[in-house]
Length: 487
Ligand SMILES: [Fe+2]
Image (cartoon, rainbow, N blue to C red; front, side, top):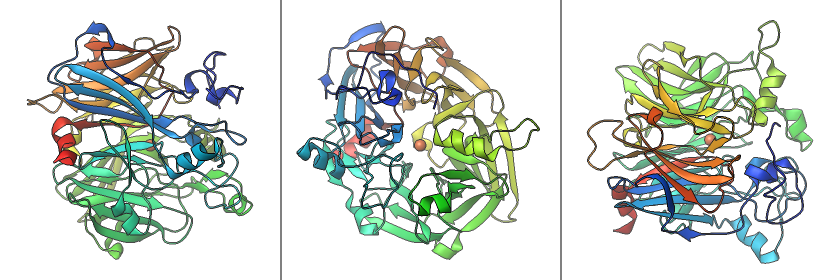
């Protein structure tokens, strides 16, 4: 795995546990709540009201054996904006595994380089470290391997408990559940090693489980995301999954199968299990969807297609593709997939060939509705989890609408999120928010851009006294949606 390390910033548990717990990846020991932060540039906009939350791994105790960035205990970092005032907070998610380890004062679980999900002798921890979703005024901390939905107070970051709707489903929830902000319904999926290998469900605006159906896949798969439109949900069956023999021996080995298709299953929001329609496309892996919507009979999904590695002859190098995916080396391009619900036709094409664009965001009010703008990171070609800049794209034409990096060599931006301004006049009337660590200056900032023009650089930049370790996903919850949980 390619990493950039520095000898300083070892993890708080002292001894060196390798490059992925050192430098920019090293966890932090303190939970902070800070106001009156040092403004380096501009002013906090008064028409920016809500909370930006970012999830990521932050190991509490030294690992048992080899460590992977997916293993660390979930920690949430928050920037809460209220009438021109900013508060920064960070807290661990109090998962069952985290609480258990705190009681004994050491790691009692193992990471994915040491074990597999479901092994009782070497338990894997549901860290809730992957993704955050705002639903009913709360934030849900989710895990990519399908776990519980931990409900978090988005202001105090207190862990409130597990979602009862997900518990009542009898299944789990993967990262990347989607909330339709118009109906406040949340669509979700889980996946696992046992037939039918996937479930799909809907939690209503009242917090109750409204729908839950099994989705039959041809075998165990490793889907990472899903999409929703106004009437449909889109589930993923991708040709990248565990080697069954290695798995039987208790080892992790994933394989890419270029001889297979990528398949997307379209199901009505409350559709019966057998009503799902599958559409086949060229083989790829796909971590993240930007957004999806309906255009007449077409379901349109825009995402970051993981471009398979090629050998010297231009053929797909399946082994290298699987290795790159496992090691989080991203080579993604903005891509559109189209599925015709009437004729069964499909179409797909690249939107932008130039930029290695990942960790997408957009105006969340328009989840499932046509969006013109996407905001993504410039992903490093070689360094794990280094996102060196932010960039805006036209999702119709793929045009690069400008980006920004303070320092393309040394900046580490977090997944940015679009934050609507009060009383917005247009889809992009608002801000783009991202934390940024500069490893040359050893400086942590929170950067706020005018989403209409990222290339102008941040309109406000605030210095934080504590580094944020490189992490995963973020979300934005507007003030009015925060209020949903406080009635
Ligand atoms: Fe993800």
